[in-house]
Length: 230
Image (cartoon, rainbow, N blue to C red; front, top):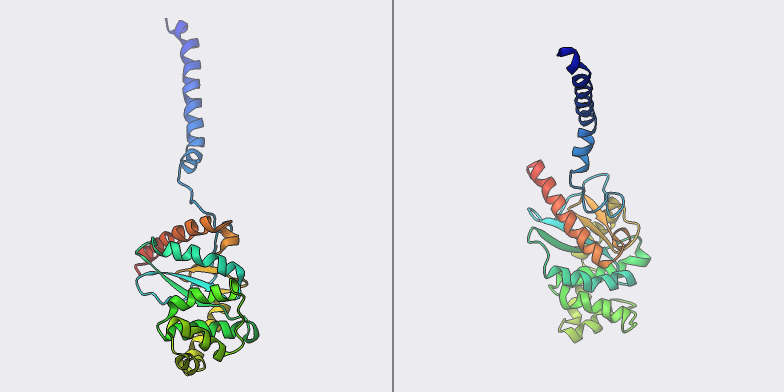
């Protein structure tokens, strides 16, 4: 009887061992393929800064927008960011920062923003500055012309003039100058998430994708903080 079963049993055992061997080889690959992939790609939709930069937001995830008032792309992004602010994660805090490549191109714009901030008038002046430059084609030649324009929004022209060149604004200008270099900014608008990640409309592909990337990076940065015990 054993001689009769032998030809049948051996091929069956060989087949079983063959299947087990295949599973052993393909198991790791199968487990890797079933792991969830990130929705957005590093060095595609965003980049990681070579050196983590300090943030100004304490236990909140910093979402810092680097902008320039004269930039048409910044102008087009502004209402998108304004809408996102209505639904942004509670774990995040938004901070706008004027870019500073050089004095000739950027200093007036940066001083204007920091003056609005110092006077507690970021809104409506921040939004209306974009409107004045890009919709009304208004050109601001000096702080006096800026002060005259701001009066229509209930801001004292004297306050604008006195604040524009103050030591406090000089310090802010220096901050923009240093951080533009530290972040490695080459164009605007650029979004920096928690001093770790950088993205932009060109990285994301369009405005809608950018908002998705920002939200993704906020959560990614939150997880990093948890892992580091921050």
